[in-house]
Image (cartoon, rainbow, N blue to C red; front, side):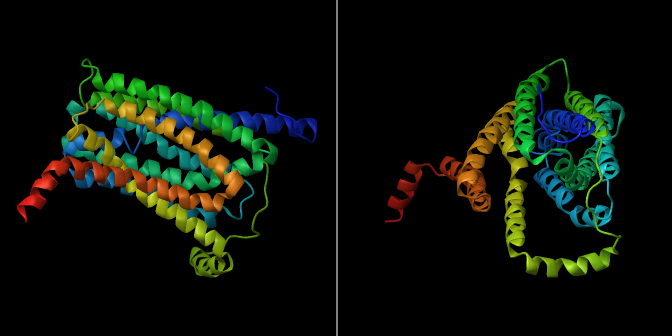
Length: 342
């Protein structure tokens, strides 16, 4: 599959090399994350280990905090560096504990319950802090390595093949969690070890990138001074502030995601293996949604679409609440209650 790019022969070869390296990174990362999913496998594991709704909710909170808190410190740390790849590789090392957690769950009978639970949350926290640090540098590297005319093709291929892998793995998750030969929590250990293997494949692909130098700030800046300049920058860029605020609020809606699969298992009576179907369904939804939002954003403006995405995100918890209320108070019971009041 040729990738037409302009420039010298060596420059063209580097661009093709980086295209495929970053593409394989994204293709392998998507199914790896599906196995270590904060909306399905992780909340189910925590629920079965503890039965605590508060700790299930902590899964989503730690993910949200990990993705947002490192943004400003990392931005200040790398803004004056011509190459961001070393920092991206350091951040990706936070994926290694996923494999250690998988091994620990395989031999869970030799580990105290409190230590098992601590390992789950330490691994989860480290992973999302690492991803929060990696996201900024990865975006910068993609911007430098993938020519503008190739980015649509790059992200399209990455989403298509990565999502296909995640969709298929959803059925594997169902098989593992419903396999009687694999007891709890060893079955989750199998999933996390496979996730770790895919994450390491993604890491290897990133390490192969030949990052070109980019435009940078001339010198480093003390973080306190950097923070003092942020309000001034936001005043000069009100559109940027609006976009960040919308993305932040949309992210907040994701705090409810860990509870859906737990509700399906505990209240609706679905088996733990239903987590696999959740993974396949949400992968399919993200692909279809990406096509729809991409089309609408191209024709009506991406900034406006963020608002519509937020409204669509609110439909899920609203539908869940309506379902709960309808199950608790069916129409005939409401009619009897109103008649009794007369």
